Length: 237
Image (cartoon, rainbow, N blue to C red; front, side):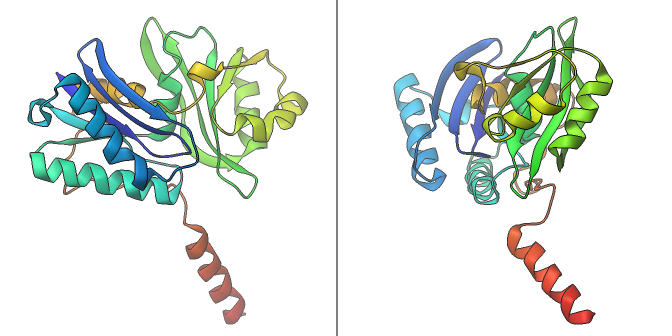
């Protein structure tokens, strides 16, 4: 089975093709460009270099959120367009799940941290048990104190990764009571290969949807929507 993976949920833009247990290609960029400038050229480069016929892809896996609202919308539009044009299903992969899957086989618990602004993080808690990917605490948007409390109550060593690590490093040092570590540079950000690999598992579990049905999962309201609600609440008082 051949899966095209796309991740534009954060600062990283990433496109990959996975066929069964083989990573055929991955193009990942973590630089100062918008995903609208990078995703399609990256996909074009991968298809050209691997002589890939997109019609041969069985499904498209995408980091479905949470994450950057703009990045998620760009990724969703790209994937929906491809899915509709190619008549291929879409596999929505929770962004935090995809990040955790980067550390396949880790003996410690895995806690991705994405900077969600407003002193919150998109996060969750995961582990691998005899090769199986286990969701200990599903992805959520919470204060750093709340996820560290969950980590501490789990009582096991943990490894942190994601763009939220530099933001919350001091909080981790102050609050974390279990042994912890940080993933290295080549494993600590989003990867379309991980999204495609996990997408392959999720497709076998029947979690694919049609391109027309696919919607990103933002987990919380956008800043503009929050500000509108706050304004309406103030006006009603």
